[in-house]
Amino acid sequence: MLNLIVNEWIKIFKRPGTYVMMGLLVLAVIATGTLNKIYDNGDQTVNPQWEQQVQQQITQDQKQLSELPPTAATYKKNLQRQIAINQYRLDHQIPPDNEATGWTFINDSTSLISFAGLFTIIVAAGIVASEFGWGTVKLLLIRPIKRYKILLSKYLTVLLFGLLMLLILFGSAAILGFALFGAGDGSTTHLAYSNGTVVEQSMLLYLIKTYFLSSIDVVMITTMAFMISAVFRNSSLAVGLSIFLLLMGGQVTTLIATRYEWAKYSLFANTNLTQYTDGVPLVEGMTVGFSVIMLLIYFFVFLLLAFGVFTKRDVAA
Image (cartoon, rainbow, N blue to C red):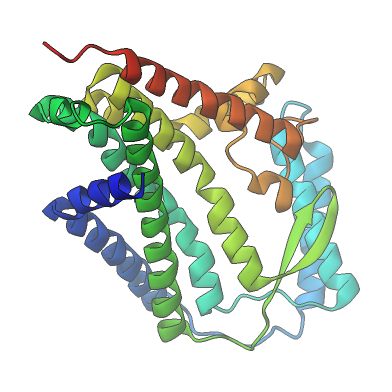
């Protein structure tokens, strides 16, 4: 199995496009950091009137919360989260941190996880379909290796490539962020909202957890792209459909969830696990256990389809 993974890894890095994708990801981080630096106002002082401002914000949010209609359930939950965090700041004398630091830049760079996922999807969509397109799949299958091992090695290679892209994103964001903005005043605490309460978390652990949880939707979409590649042998279909769902799936699910409770059974209602660690569930009553079970169901369905079709397909013609 290890030799198969190494072989697939070599194939990926023999393609110039792989280095282009890695370079584009680093350039995206540099561009984001440069723009943030240009538009950074440089004001790093704590406003002595911050308590009054935070109290005013709480009052405004509470008023807005009471005026919202019942249909705005998601917005209400976000307001409750904001009120709870601001109240915690007042109770524990923690002023808002408006300073741009390396930590905040790493956190802001989570928006580029989808960009890194885009490249992983491209690799996943082509890693099986390209073998059929080039006719090299016959050379793979005549070897004395079971088909499921060949497909599994390809899937594991895709996951490793996705992990590499995530590490490149995190590493480049950390290097550039601390180089441009520094470490700030040394505060490494993040205020998170979970299960209706505010908790203090280590910033480093919070960022690692955020990157990991934010990449789950990419893993699921990548698995779906891999399945389409193995079942339909069409990389264009896999790339197109997967990118569309990556960009629009979450937004469409959020809109549906405002009206229908059954939206919680969709894939994209459960991929954002940060809603349980630092946010509010998309649909009331959802739990982290429920989301994990739903994700496992979708995950195994995708893999069963991929392995079931690939291991039984006749490629002699």
